[in-house]
Image (cartoon, rainbow, N blue to C red; front, side, top):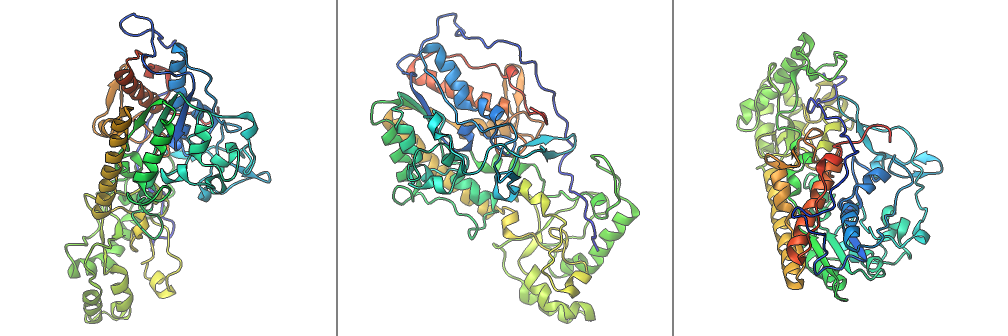
Length: 519
């Protein structure tokens, strides 16, 4: 039925060209007084965290992205008031990812090259990374930026993390060393700590499928539970009198990864492959309409008759919802089987058992659901594991005639789990900051602002609109250069407020919103 399902056009994108980068950042405070560090000592600054700390952007870690990491921006401002050298464990080039034996590693490993915008959609840059998997740069350290892509809070205090994380393995000085131990070897006088988003993000990216990823529990020992692990980090980093700044966790469900695809994303023109060229959208052809009508006849008219609260006919004129599994629903398997067997339709009767199993806990997407950007590549593809008679009826297209799996969509009950976990983690973070007298950045609050209208600074309104909002990179999770600059300014505000410094924030004008294909 759906032979060559066209790429689902998520959003028609335009973007702003890179800004002039010649303007000099102002180094004096707004009141004209000389800059001062206040009660803070920035002579040995160490940043600890995850990909957000490392400067990860556009789906990869690469040199130019690392240069724009918020700790690197902070270090540049600290240098104006006595801050020392700040070393970063740079990748070997601006491709990102790793190679092995002269070959690029599969993107499926999460180690792919960076993305750029080709005028219609994100696309991987060409080339093979010069960063070889398993190579070490530890001898050139120590490195002040110890941000490790993929790290959870519990990972930073877990011995042997380097064995499972190639980014930490590059600069760790021993295979059993923890990230916290590496940071403390430098005896920091000031630190930044932003960790915890991956403790909920992994679960969210897997659509709340607990068989594939789990939220870190709040309780449990160091390396197991979030609370004890986070307090161990803060207690250790402050043990020698170091001051620092910590940030809480944004609601990950508010980032473009989860807000870009709407609950009615399937345009009528995508149901048949008409070989249109360009970005679209395009008008629905007679072939598209014929496919939609066939799906309605073979499937949705029958499901609607059985369960009108879950299924509606597809439209030939407006965008349509996706077909999903919702494990929170009452299983209507027996109802569907009974109705199919007594329909008087021999084909329907022969498929009764299959229909009950497949659609008993299925429904169409509705307001409150969240569809990750990563699901885009699944929509419309065929579940080839289905029996031939099922495929012959055109019932194997994911999200169209066959339900997307639990891992592909977040339903409201799963979103609430993520929210509650985030609230609990943020309570622990705030309490630790208060107990140790640290500067505190309410990242959850300002990220919520970005997601709801944006934050205006230096004449720019930074929002979370995918690719065009200026706040996020093309992976839908990590900030753009301008987004990292805004984050650095929020950290500076918190540091000034806590320690009496008068550091000047950077000008967003000097930071682009996306990288070109060639760097």
